[in-house]
Image (cartoon, rainbow, N blue to C red; front, side, top):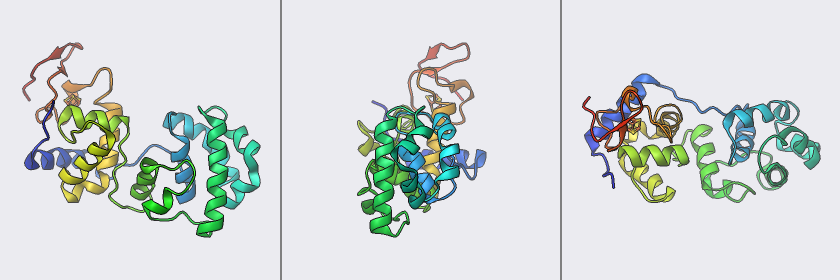
Length: 225
Ligand code: SF4
C-alpha cells in the first residue's frame, strides 16, 4: 500500500496546485446556497454536465424552497428526468424544500448536523455545501479524491471516512479550504481512473504511485522527474 506523503512533500504538492489554480471552483452551476444544495443532491451518480443541463431550466423557475414547493414533484421531474434516479431525487428535493421552510426559515443552515437532517443530504453533500458556500475547510471525498489520495500518497485510506480524516490531518492548514476542489479537478482531468496522465502530471516527481504511465500509454515502476 502507498504510504502517506510527509509534511514537506504535502506542502510542495499543494503549493504547485495553488500556483496553477489559485482559486479553484467546482463545475456544478448554482446561483445561491439553496441551488447549490439542490445541485449537489442531484449530482449523486450523475455527471456535473448532466446536472447542469437539467438545473438550467429548473433554477430559472425555482431558486428558493418556496418556489420549489410551488413547482411540485411533477414540475421538478419535468426538468430533471434526464438524470439517473430522478423520481427519488425529485421527491427528496421537495421534502428538503419543505423542511428548509419549516425549520430554517427558508435558509440553508450552515452546520453539518443541521444539513444532514435534510432528505437526500449525507455527509458528502453537506461537506460540499459547507466548503463551497460557507468557506469552511470541509472535505467531501468523492471517487476522484479517493483515487488520487490513495495513488499519490496525499491521503491514504481504505474508505472515504479514513481518506477524509487523512486530508484533514495531513494537508497543511493554509491549503485546507481549496484542497477539495484541487483534488477533484486533478482526478477528473489528470489522474484519471483508467489512464492517468502521469507524463504531464504536475506532481509526478512526488507521487508515490508505482504504476505511473509513461508517454505511449505503458506503465513504469518509476519515472524520474
Ligand atoms: S503521477 Fe500519475 S498517478 Fe501520480 S498523481 Fe499524477 S497522474 Fe496520478
